[in-house]
Length: 129
Length: 382
Image: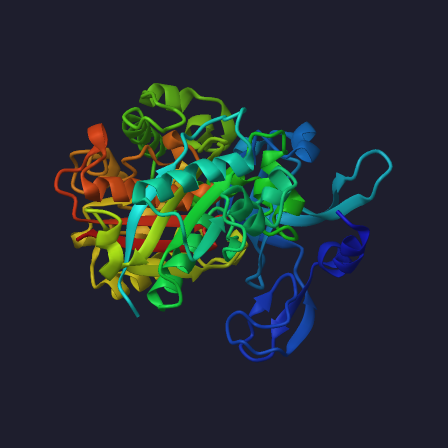
């Protein structure tokens, strides 16, 4: 993956920066140019709370090559108190404990690395709250 | 708009076709369709293909395939909508003929997945790279999240998911072109190796090479090419959020519902009129969600329909008589056309051991990504 893309996505990945639509109040994460609800283009930047609730989940047993060393690993869609939903891995727990309704904190973590000397990819993971 | 018919079809066997290249798969299917209609000149070719570029390093399939078909000069272009590429190619060809711009148009689909590519990563390009794939999700993983949401909302069980696969293989065992022509038991499905919880290997469609082609023309000219034309009565295409997290209910496929109502409105039919259907069962949970979004069952009701045997040959609404993506195989860009080929055979009464008695109206539903694209066609025997 080319590096300019990582740089561009730093606000989203490192700081959980989202946008609140000034038209209808919808929170979009990551930020977008057009509101998917009301099609207005005026957003107020905001940060998501670093916590949320599991909406649905899986545990990946056969992963992409870059992630296979971590398997089995849980992945979930988590909804923050602002109503934004994001896909994150769930860490620091028994995968069997991940369930819809589970409360998690969103912590800054290493997600992946491009080989031994490549870019380290950071982002957030959910951990039991 | 003019009325449009399918007058012939061609299709390779589906499977791991080590001796056949991407281009030769296309040519085999396309030539079979042309020979069946005894046609040597056509006005256009659409090629459904998800990722020739990543599977075998080959883009620009339009001129390549026209050339290898011996038809350089003919308008030809690739159509891409991930796993819905074939269905969207059919729709593109349909509207070209319906508009009056062309008379004879070949709608095709082809995919060569077994040439050494990293299939998991190539398929994942149909998901959201920035918000999903970055975190290590796979396609089985996305449908597994849909499955858990469905189980949580509707009480769908692991046995329900597994019953879909058993039914698919029952049909596929009767399809000479299917990749896996054997039946499987509920126990085999439930004990197969884990891929992404709750989905196991036998809940997932395989990696497949294959191609399929259908020839379209105005209905008024169909008798020149066949005694058994099949009319395309309706076509509907819809999109949904690419990222699963952006959908209000991950267990409901909005794009499938929308594309179905568009196709049904155009065709002037409802679910009660449909005798046989091919739907996009890339994973067993997908078949349940699709049946519910199309209106064959209420949300949460498709498992009961399946367990009652109503989606099996002899049931109220036989689904995926070809074996579906699960048993017939899923060469992603070819799937939408292969579905049309199955419905064509069913409506012509040529489906052999898989024949649905007196099938008159059928449909094909083809889907891309985790349900972000859905395309539906309604066909009728005339």
